[in-house]
Length: 345
Image: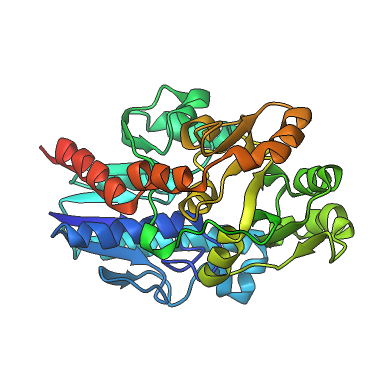
């Protein structure tokens, strides 16, 4: 099958550092090629892939200095879509897989082949619901069942969990005694809450996170003053090697999320290394974490603090096995191909 993958243009594929959606797109391309399919990746020109790379921009939007202006950044995304429409005329695929979200949907009626959108973000944002609602008959894939709840009237073809290449996340029984925080320095990811929980529990917290332009004020005002460089340390934004080192040596990953987490790729990455996850019960957490076996899903701060004390009950091998059985990139690709078959039949 000839398959086109449309990646967000913010980051490279795979991302050099932070970038969950771009990593999922990379893993999917690689696995589909292993299954014998012809895959075209429309992404930034500095991406690295075994698929046929069709550059939309020479570099990812984030690397462009003018993209610090958020209005220009948004304009660049639509300029990229214009280029994509032109490029697709020469490929003539069997199916187009959109990972760019709502921005691509208004242009989907021009395609003469099946078009499917994976929803990588939350579905409780009003203006996005407006766009999705206008194209509710299009085909959608959710990345967790809970993701659908705020907007369940779309034409969902399936739920396909995100997957990682487990060989790139080595398992470790040993830890270095600290707890970890990984993600974006944004309010919804709960960095302030993670620091306060670590201080109340009397544990060391090592944080690694992307500080995007839109989050700089929040980070500088709310998070940075709480980082003392001793009990609470901040590594900045890290690449894959740094992420693996952080996760596999951690006692647990603290995820006091403040939003409906659509999936939580960092949950899976931690568990693949054997590191259990403690998270608030929001969004997909109960689907990803087997509470009591691969971590704890809690409702209150009191329960969160109790989970930190009880984390030694978790067998790290169980964390690894859960990822291998449910969240590998090979499983993800096979599940997506079932969707492709259904739509092209």
